[in-house]
Each structure stands twice: as structure tokens, then as C-alpha cells.
Image (cartoon, rainbow, N blue to C red; front, side, top):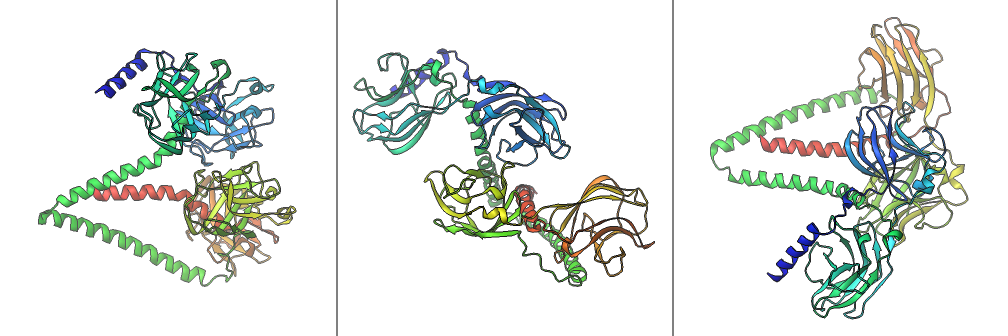
Length: 616
């Protein structure tokens, strides 16, 4: 009862006490986004030297756009750096309605270097919303920063902490706390008085949110969070205080509020919400599974059993026949197209081989290839997942170290690496780096400050390599039926991109063809499937973009031209020439990217399918 009464009294103090409203603290305000298109607006704040906060951000999500920042004065342009969204992904932005988000700059940049921030379209090469900083405006601003309070040296009971750090205006990190757990009535206290005493001071709950006596600690790190109405700027000291003997057993001094300008707790809270979202989704799924299992166990009657059996049989046979029909189409396509076609085996093409990962720990190994100037492929990658590690790259010669750049994983996440067993993955460099700048690549531990596996590039070896690159073939200007294409681009050795394709749909028997002959003709050459994988006549197109993919046994290096060919009148209605000297990015990289992008959707589809089946 006494403990409960103490907690109630403390709660009363919090509610009736200080009136500081720090829930509205977001850092240093720097201005409003000027909305130019797609309903973009929001208020911008600096969270710390490497993070931005956009409060009440809005974007209608109806165009492909990204967050871009620039370090060169002037209007936003395509020379800026793309930064990851609030989830750490570099994908096109979704729809936002009054969302508060935190954006992290790459380590190479500081917010004070910025000249502009924009919601940028890489397709239209225009800004949908922006803020421009003139005359080094950001360099004169006060930037929130964490504050080390130094070590905590205890007076008894083995109390010590390696370092106490104020991380935000409400969070304090105690690093490597040691305490033997035997002091009577030991609590955290914070106060303003010259002398450290519990009288008139504030009891602070522990890392679990408890106001009970402190438990034994053996070199652990703890995060202490103040209630909503308090900040560390309200206090001058923090203590491990023994009520029984009214004595401070270990403490640190907190500088005056004039000397403190801490990062906002709101930014930390937003990050924590994002980290917890996947777990919350899993919890919902598991709850529904348990509910389903409970309800199924209650079914006992023959009628209920028959009902379930009939539903299952209908569902099974529907899926079975759809699967068989799809498989039959695939077999026929293979027999009539692939077997009769070319014999070139391009499925093993991964780009430019640059070496093997040297495994140092945690079963690391894999073969590394360059897919294009900003993309790496690791083939047959292995990592046991038993230690916190990340993909890191460095641009300074020597061995891997903590001054490299962390890369997102194959799903564009910056979280610690999971377990991998002989997996093929694609990694993208940030836009300000090129693969030819790299001096090393490592699986790096930021805790142990060591490499678990690495490859080191000496003497600018990467600069001498031939790097795969996309190839523009120029426009197609048709001779009839309004046929035109703004640009034809070879994206990989098997994919071709038609931009702004126009065709009135009236030509009889119009197909895509590719060939090697000097004269463009269908005889002895190859019909190419359309963007749907169909070999039927081409349909009407009104400035549409199409991606054409060759069958697995062919590459665009096998051909000298690509044509929209009319079989009825045996005439080329529009075509482009394909050069002989080509070194295109691997289709395997594109396929792996698509697999990663589809993974989340497949997980969601699987979840929804199971829930629907449970609900029948």
C-alpha cells in the first residue's frame, strides 16, 4: 500500500506540477515546404545534424517522386542526393496525409550543408514541393545535439556507469551500469537544488517504467525516459539516491538550459513506432491464427465437418486447375519458343565479376559482381545472422573501418542483417557514390567495430573495369498509323523500354520483331512478345511506357535491329538499330529487384488469403 500511495502521489505531482508542454518540441524550425504540385506541403525541422523532421507532411502519391536534397545553391535539380524515406527505403513515395516523419541524411552530409530540400520527380525532372535556403542560412542556426554528462562514479555498492548521455530532451542513456543490488530503497532522482537530496526533487522511473527500487545491474545499458510534462533541461543533476540513508550514491551534473539544446523526443518516438510496426503486424496475425484454431476445435458436428470439407474441396480444385492451366501454357511456350530458339545461355550472366568475399567470422562468403555503376550483386551470399552487422562500403584506401557508408540491404532496409543461405541479392549504392570509387566492401559490426567478411580493392582496380550500362537507341519515327516512340532504351541484356509509345491500333498483323539481317524482314528473324508476354497483334497505345522482355535463351546482343513489323504488308512500320558493341546490365539483377519488391506484397497476399479462408 505504501508503494502504491507513493506512485499515486508522484502521478499527482506530474499532473499538477510543471506546465512545460514539450510534446510540441520538434527541434529547430527551418520553414515550410512550398507546394508546387501533387498537394505537397509540410513544416520542416532539424532533429539533429543528420536528421530532418517533416511535420504534417502531405503528398497525394499520384506520381513517382522521392525526397532529394542539394548542396549546391540554386533551384532543385537532378544533381541532388536522393535520401531514404522514413522507413529507410529508396522507393517512390506513397500517399501521406498530415504525417509526421523523420528523414536521415547519409553520413557524408550535414543538414547545415543543405541548399535545398525537394519532393523530386526523376521522370519529369521537376520539383513537386521544395524549400530553398539562401546565403548559408542553415549554418547560423543552433542545431540540436546529444550531450555527454561523463561517467558516473559511485560511492558504494559497486555503483558505476561508463557514460551518461542525454539523447533527447526526455531520454537519458546509462551506459554499462554496474550495481550490486543490495542498497536499501535505491531510486533514480533528478532535481534543481544545489545539494543533491530527494526533498523537493523528482523521482524518475527506471527503464521498465517502474518506480520500484532499482534492481541489480551487471554492465547493462539502460534508457530512462521522463514523463510527457518534463524535460532534462528542467534539472541540474541526476542521481542514484538511497532514501533509507538519505544519501546520493552516485550522480552526474546537468548543464544549464542555456548550454543544452537536445534533439526532440518526438523524433525518437516516430522512429520507435516504425521499428515496432512489423512486430505489431505479426502479433495481429498470430492472434487471428489462435482465434481460428480455437473456433475450429469447437466444431464437432457432422454438418459442420461436411461444410468445411466441401469448402476445402472447392477451394483446392479451383486452385489446382488454375495452376495446371498456367503450367501447361508455360510448357507450350518453352517447347515452341525456347527450344526452337537460340542456344545462348545468358541465365548465368551477373555483370562484371570483381571477386570473392573473404569470410572472417559468422560463415560469411559470396561472389561479388557489378551490375551497373551504382549496383552490386552478391551471388550465393551466406551469413549466419547470429551477430548485428550491416553492409558497409569505404572510399578511403585501407582496411574496413567505422568511417564507411552503411548500405541498405536487398529490401532497402537499414536494419541488421538476417540469416542468408546461398542467396543472390542486389545492393544499391547511394546516388552520390559510384562503384568505381570504392576501396572496400564489408559486412561490418558497429558494436564490435570489426569486419565479419570483406573484399579490398587496391590501386584503383575498379576504375579499369568495364561497367555494364543501359543503352539508349534513340526514338522511333513510324511511317504510318501514327507510330512513334519518344525513346527506346536497352535496360538489361533481356529488357527493352519503350517510352511514350503511340499507335492507332489499326495496322493489320502488327508485331514486334528483332533480327540480324541487313534488311528488316520477318523471314528468318524472331518475333518478340509484348509487355504482357503475348505474341498476339499489338494493341492501340496512347503515350504509354512498355517494358519488353526477351525469352530466357535470348539477349539483345543477339540482334542488330528492333522493329514494329506488319506481316500483312510485309513492311517495317518503325524501327531502331542495335549497336554491336554492347555491355548491358544483367537481367538477373532486375529479376532479383522485382522479387524483393514483390516480397512484401506476397506476404500481405498470403496473410489476406489465410484470413479469408479462415472466415469462410
